[in-house]
Length: 79
Image (cartoon, rainbow, N blue to C red; front, side):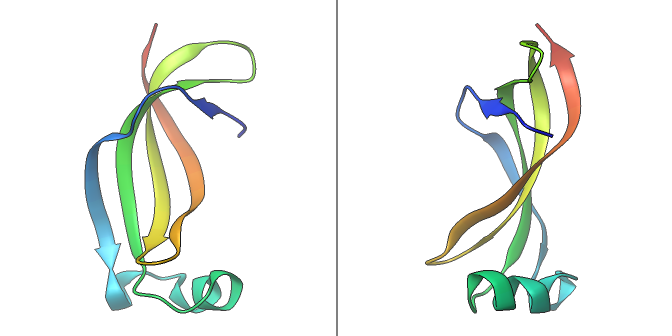
């Protein structure tokens, strides 16, 4: 889903790290070797239809590589 992040990401929490990250092999191949973590957080986003809402986002990140594959998981509050 396409979306635009309008605020900083808050309530950041690690879901999985190290060998718990199931896509680790693919992430290393596509983005480079790193200590990958799967992370979630909350931000204000704008959806393609113009709706603005708070949403839960998930992504992968590794030191020196940064955030990759940001995903919109679910709306939390529509404004």
